[in-house]
Length: 285
Image 1 (cartoon, rainbow, N blue to C red):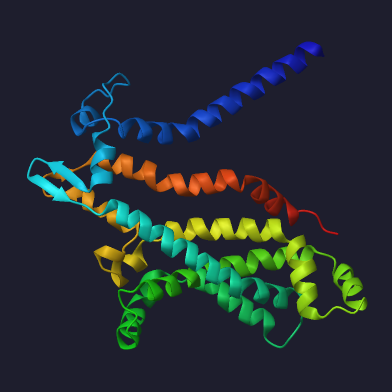
Image 2 (image 1 turned 120 degrees about the vertical axis):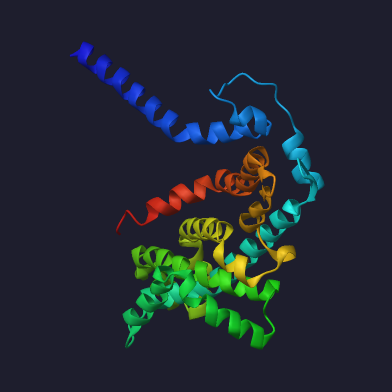
């Protein structure tokens, strides 16, 4: 029995190691690519032994990319800053609108409530190309084309359905008796919502906000069509590395490393809230 238990532990460790290698290998390979030149990356067969270089990161930070056709000006750092602005403000706006709406859908029953909630969720199902043309025309008429305000408004429409449906589940899992007891003590609905409901579901709200931030950060098609180069996020700015002289794989790898760093740092910082939030809905009470 002891021998079988040891064998199971060893087998479990081997399987976990294989899974980690399978999922981490692309990330490690991209990290290694970011310290190589194009010649080193494209050599056959590939090799893990190479002389590392910081030229790829230097090109991104300085904004000057050296190619065979000459020097190319790139705006990667500006694109990175644009991604941060668009993601932060769109998630903040979606939280301001979505958390009270999620509470209303969870606590109150009204006519066509489920239909409205499902209609909002259907925005996540609709292909972006379906709404790009009317959005472009409306934005031109309203003067929102190629503005941060217009892009933030579009981005929050991406985040809002996600936040609404995730946070709604957390409010439904929270016992309403706690709120009733607090309101019986003479407190109003708004005070109860602010001091009781939101603190109790804070991990779930944080988890929904983090997931919405990742979705906003990774968005591509809306910014590609609705914004010019000086307001486009890093997902669109990466197209600058496909040049007439070839594809700059080293700079693309360095750009991937730099672009995932903010979301990775945010996820590591908020991992406690993320774990608590994702597990909160698993317990009915």
